[in-house]
Length: 357
Image (cartoon, rainbow, N blue to C red; front, side, top):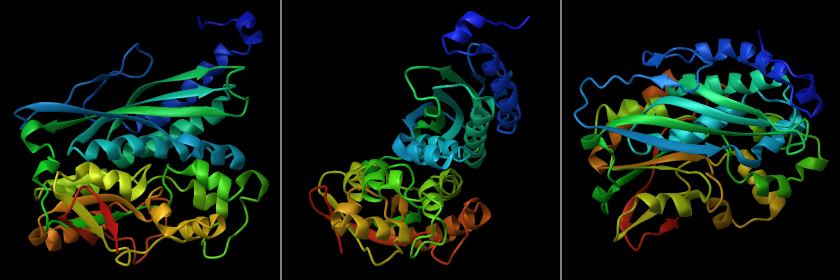
């Protein structure tokens, strides 16, 4: 017999809605299953048996993150089936920076009111992200918190675990002047800087269904485009060559994230003319009257991931990465000539700085 409480429902927590949401999300969770998954959902813990064949010293690499105020765009558009991709991406893209292959993911969803169809829609996006990353969704928590969140609002966070061999972990200490920096294209804003975006574009008081100059979609669609997941292209590259450092360009943009993989005595010179800056960033820059340097200090500006490697390996690296990008295209964005990996700069002598040129 299923648990049911009318008294609890009167306080704002509907247990039966929770059961319905679980039933609706089962299909989405099922399509993320990988070989290591043990059991189904409903247990007190998610179970996973990793394949350790060929790994001498297994190391678990973990990452946790949320979506931030990009959620406000989803609320305004009443569109919830892609925000879960952002949640997965923010975690697995961090894990891949250590050279680890993501194994599994768990989510935490807190809602003002449990509306089963909306919850299932959110989880469908999480499942899409897991499929793109090749990891399994093995558990999570949906908490109904009336009075804490508004009825139509929620918060979303996640946690991912990956696996690497200790002797294959990426060690940025080997980075040196002369090394090449390769950039992988972003899908847009990704999941950082939305407090500024919302303020500059005044999203609360303008139509998100309007087409803006330079954008190939509505403003809302451009803002809600999910974060790109880089796992498969990077794993493809790591199977062929040594990569010295990988930086996920998130909050803090180029100036905060690239120095995290630069050892003492090294700086990065970035050629901003070597890649195309997506129109959505130019829109933000113009409407907010923001200096270009400030834009690079906040946003990814069209480069979601940077890789550092020996310059003699760049040609092979670009072939490998672009082949993988073509084989695993961004599913919610039209491919273009600019949707390719490219050399965007180099490591130079310096004091852990980023120089734009």
